[in-house]
Image 1 (cartoon, rainbow, N blue to C red):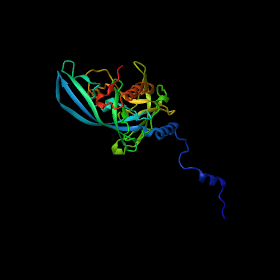
Image 2: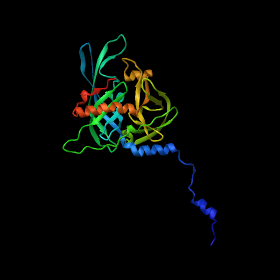
Image 3: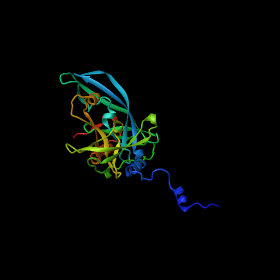
Image 4: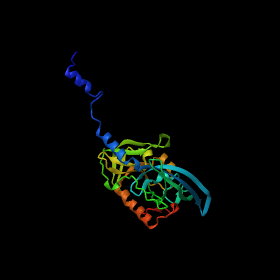
Amino acid sequence: MKKIPLAALLLCLLPLGPSAEEPSGNVAARRVLNRYQEAVVWISAVVKVQMGGMGVQFGSGQEYRVETLGTVISREGLVVASYSMLDPMGTSSDGAYGFGEEEMQFDVKVRFSEVVIRLADDTEVPARLVLKDPDLDLAFLLPHPPQGGTPPRSFVHIPLERGGTADLLDDLILLGRLGQSLDRQPSLAFGRVSAVVRKPRTFYVGSMYASDFGTPVFTLDEKPLGICLIRKAPQPGASMSMSMSGGLLSSVVLPCDQILEIAEQATEDREKSPGRASAETQEMKH
């Protein structure tokens, strides 16, 4: 029987293809996905917009069905989302809404109903909007308390209290979720910090995408950095569509500590009035 040289045998046992190690960023991103993918959820709501002016209401209002992404940030199911993505009119708050300096000013009222949080397993959890901060583009939603003695659910969430920091040109991990046409699968992407804004508050600016608004951003050491939101230029009377066309919107990451500070008020409101209706949503005052 012919003997096979030992060197040839060892070559047969080596793996085929390139032997270079996988980039550490890919490994970290997959770990983030495996740990936190269920914390990225879809939110749907019916939004009713009523307009009026000079003491006159114009019709019964228009209703829109909206869907956007959000991030669970507490074991009780508190979700943070981009308020601009929930409000189809792009109104910053109830009150004056103008279409030009010399034109008539309108009063716009926005009401939310049929709010549902869709979890990763397609479970639909009825919820309510409990706090909004249009200036920071924040909306906070809470599941309705369980009924009939059902024990409260424990939600997979992003621990914002363990938040990290980033510097210029640092790589970031973006955790998202695809839409219904793609089976709402979790998604990963990389971004990079292109600027750090310090005043009037800290924002990280980088390569983010519109589909990522309301979703978490992580550093390469797998710590949450913050939530991707929309930063609007101060432009009284500008709607969302006008701002988009005029280049008045920027994609930013609001750091974890700032979100937690405002989230505490949402939790306090829930404890004081657990049955608060969505139409009575509190607005954060700065």
